[in-house]
Length: 263
Length: 263
Image (cartoon, rainbow over all chains, first blue to last red; front, side, top):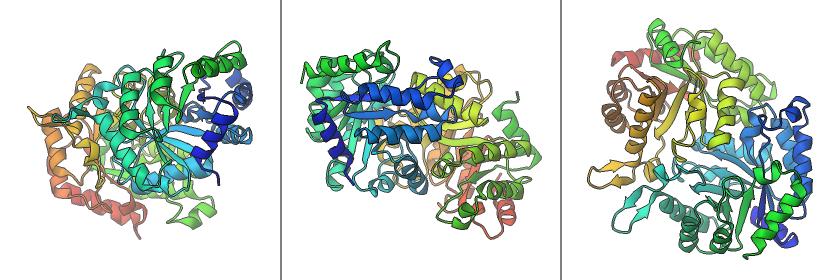
């Protein structure tokens, strides 16, 4: 099977794009789509509108599971892959041992995702192995998230002699595990709303570790600084900015081109 | 609606028990139950076997979602509540803003759970509000988890002058938010495999904050130390030790009685 990183690089090259297309079908914003049971079709339409300008698709499972739409999510993921786009399941799972094994099964067998987002709070040792057992699939670890209050625990200083913060330690541990796994397996989530922290982590982990950078569009992350800091092994996520644009096709193209201005 | 804490206290008193009954239906351990599509029945049988000796039921959503059993999980939860036991949905969710709102909807509307376990890594500010909006429901935050490698980030020191560690900071923030929410809303997960850390947190947050203590049984947590450290506003979880016992009824009673020895 082709690995997540190979699929990402291939789509990035074919579509000349760092754009990650987020899929957040929100019942409060499109109630009529939910009433008419057309969420799957809505998602597929959004994918179609970005199929030549995105490098990866990222559905957030919460929007589906809140509304009993797991079966629809399975088909949406298969459709994105049919369109030659790899899929990151945005699930932010984090559990131990045997339970981590279940979540790995959910992400990679049930949904057939190419990568999944994971939460590092419980530590790598008892949590990551079950995901790594799926050859070539990506584990994308929350590092410095895009939200306003992300610093509450992520920016606590854990080493006064080096000044290391929690999120930096997470990145160091992730990079070490990625190396042990042969590389190209473990990536990081770094919010585009914190381009300095993103640049900092890129320096720490080197150019090859995959970065998922959400926060552009609605959250107003800094595009130029993000593109310059993250380099080529990065996908910049836009969800609302495309999902709820008057013309998703034009919006997706615009984001792609805007990112490319600074590559 | 009766709050999670009221339901827990009522069941604790009626059944004279600190036992939390975990439900982890594992396809690898009971393949025949999965083949015969009898997971729902299996879960209900386990609940029945502990209905007079447990104070709360905790299904782990991963075991259901890995196997497309969300509908079954809904009915299992409803059944536990029909048996007058409150339900903690063990989901360990953690996401921001609008997505947190979806996960709150999943836990409290779709599944109708009385409480849900949550991951603090993204901070409280952008994550907890959507759950708090559901009156009386419990938010149970991962603090010091039961796994061997839990210290990797949870025990990093974040304040050299006071010696505060990450998990202690999480507990302090949680207690502050619980107070702001009127009390009885925010609890903590503290592994029974770390009774000294559990005792430490009980001193920090006071006797009223709810503690969920997993890790007894298979993980060999120290029962006496846990019961003595945690006090009455605690439920000690056992999953495998009852789920896969030859006689779940006897096992549940035995755990309850063992816990009561030290109360």
